[in-house]
Amino acid sequence: LSIGSEPALNKAKDSYNPHIKKLAKNYQFFPPRRIYLEKRELEYNQIEINNLIKRGFEYVMRTDKPNGGKGQIYKLLKNGLKELTEQDKITEAYREFARRKDLTGISENNYYKLLK
Image (cartoon, rainbow, N blue to C red; front, side, top):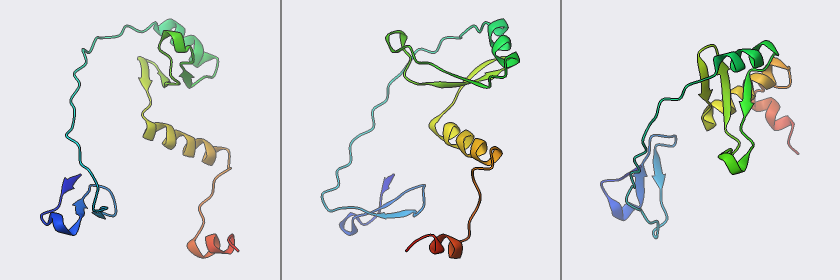
């Protein structure tokens, strides 16, 4: 989000639609914070991952809160694990709905027929 060239207009340019946002007069901007984390290479137990894949699982979710689990979801891969982002989770949910035939597209006209 970047402040527009005319701050008196209370507008901002954004990368998401609508690209020009109207802001409240008292909208406050805060400076960004940068946090550096030390990245370490993880070693995967591919035998255990393959066993889960053979049992028909595609994903696992960490649930043990005392040990760092916060509901993170991982896709099981032939070369390790991939943590799903929030957008990945939404995309996978849509795909699953479509696969189960629980999701269909609807036109705007038909959508408004669903409303009173």
